[in-house]
Amino acid sequence: MQTDMTGKVALVTGGAGGIGEFICECLAKVGSTVVMLDVDGNKAEQTLGRLRERLGEVAQRIEFSLGDLNDLQATDQLAQDLVKRHGTIDVLINNACINPLGPLDEAGIEEFERTQRINSHSGFVLARAIVPSMKKKGAGWIVNIASITFNGGWGDFVPYVHSKGAIVGMTRSMARELGPFNIRVNSVSPGAIPTELERQVWAHKLEEYTQFILNHQSLKRRIEPQEIAQTVHYLCCEASSGITGQNLSVDGGWWMH
Image (tube, rainbow, N blue to C red; front, side, top):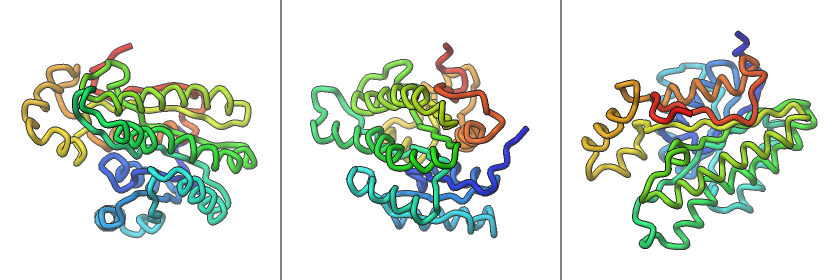
């Protein structure tokens, strides 16, 4: 199986977070130069510290770039700067997200718009800036992180679920348009993954939430961030050379379709 990614440059948004950290680790281990993009420099330094402990010299392949995806114009400029610095971005992983929780009639308009900018609009902006370099090279890989909440529809998550639905639609449209240029675009829909974001959102009833997850999954264990990272890696290497325009659920058999 062709899984090596030596010589590839990968940009991972939300790279300092729970899933992002393991995507960065996974791609670095198979040879990629990884740009960890995150809005939180302090958290990124902590993440890089853990990666150095686990990876040793391999962690030198990971660099940090500070960026706020809520500012779309700055995000566009940052992407152009990264392409100039590295010559190309071969792999784009749109992973960053926020997850406001609450009833529809209490959701603020700005909160809704901010969720769309960070979770989905930024992926469009980054792809628009990076795709020309992929076309020039004759190959590229884009993986967008969606969510099974779009598949099943969850209440009290309207801004978040809206953004994830947009990601799936964007994935399919990009895949159709970019396939002739040998650029593959897919999305991954994680189930309920134990991350710091999950702990923050569900702190008020974490034990009850965990049992709810296990009741609904076919696999009676938590799905770990590393398993999402491995799926992302698969979609970015030649082992998945015939796959584009797909949304892969990694959810322990919660949502079957």
